[in-house]
Amino acid sequence: LLASVDDPAQPDPVGPRTGHDWVVDVIAFLLAVALGALTLGSDMHDSADPWMTSHVVVDVVCGSLACLSLWRRRRWPLGVALACVLLGKFSTSATVAELFALFSLAVHRSVRPALLVAALWLPSALIYEQYSGRTDPLAVVVVGAAVLVSAVTAWGMFVRARRQLLLTLRERALRAEADQRLHADRARTAERTR
Image (cartoon, rainbow, N blue to C red):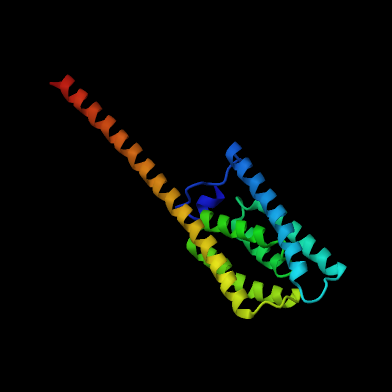
């Protein structure tokens, strides 16, 4: 109900999770955790300097919080996406959770909030590069982040547009069916009157 107040064209108002929603949410959470751990391991080996224990702890805590926040992305897609981007400044293990949150935002909200969060990714990626001590060239970071974020945002917007189209077609079909019934009732009434 809250989603439809924010966005009248919302195809799927927030309600209780269905069985399908639970399956999707569990898979998203598990993928975010597993791929986040792989990303963290890869970044630790790619770093010019060995990571301090406190750096690893901060990364794991921020990544864990980002992954846990995915459970709330259906109700608060903008808040979760913003939180994930902020956590991603200090965590490479939050990257996959950030992508899931951005995708959910693009699916469940209008274009403007999705583009806002997508635009925040670049400074976040640059801050993380400085924080982590990685030696990637700046162009690789900028182009990589831009391509990844653009692809996820575009995919989410495509899913949203498809859902809205299906909703519109369903509403038209129901309206046409109701009009047909009304027309048939009027024809029967006219026949009886004659």
